[in-house]
Length: 312
Ligand code: FPP
Ligand code: MG
Image (cartoon, rainbow, N blue to C red):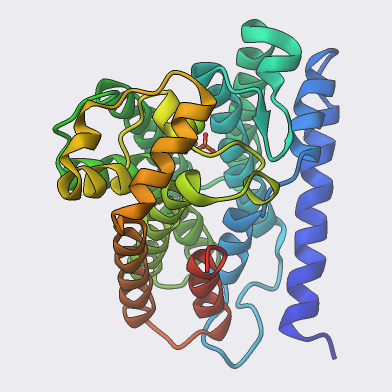
């Protein structure tokens, strides 16, 4: 008998296949640009959440027998995620993502904007085949939140007075809402508790972004695929920086312009203990997320733990 793990693996393989198919369906050169984006990989965390949120309890088995709609939802969420990263790299003029050259660096603004637009449009094209307005609304709300989150982040660039609550709100918009949408979609496809699972997704999404921001300061390039201090270089004010400035007021004046300066400031941030404090907050959010799960679910709990463990 196939286990829940076998079923999950098989579904993830089909999600991957469909992502590649969608990229290949574009006209040249978008097929290549979208294809390279998909092929660059990523953890596929959001599709995993869609699939897992469709299970009930830790006794194994997914509540969905016909999984075509579930897979479309998983594909749609990953397409939105990929689209936002392609656009984000345009805005950041980022040379590398996941250790490989970005679409922006290969194809310029126009190519990357079009590739992101294509992936974004195809996400809705995929999901709409489920014939469920509620699902389209969930994805649309998350995408709108992403756009607003990105804008608010730009507004806050280089500010020395960003309150922690504002930073957390930005993270919620920019990251947590798509995690929430992933869990909601899985729940909707399986008739599960959408509110509770959505809240779980939102909480681990927030923890994910917090830890991502910690990694920007301390993560080695081999693990992150990008140099340390990129947030500092583009003026993004993150929790480690906010906390470090509270502890070391000389950090209020810094504005690095070279990679070497950014690395040096990363070391000063780390020396304040701000990274541990930010990580503690993320761990607390993960614990809260697991506590709030409507049913014990070993797989979802493992994903939640991994959001934080990847930086241990
Ligand atoms: C990556 O985070 C970026 C995001 C999570 C959001 C990007 C959103 C947009 C560009 C606007 C919305 C776009 C669409 C298509 C709806 P990060 O910059 O913190 O991480 P990074 O270091 O990996 O770039
Ligand atoms: Mg970015």
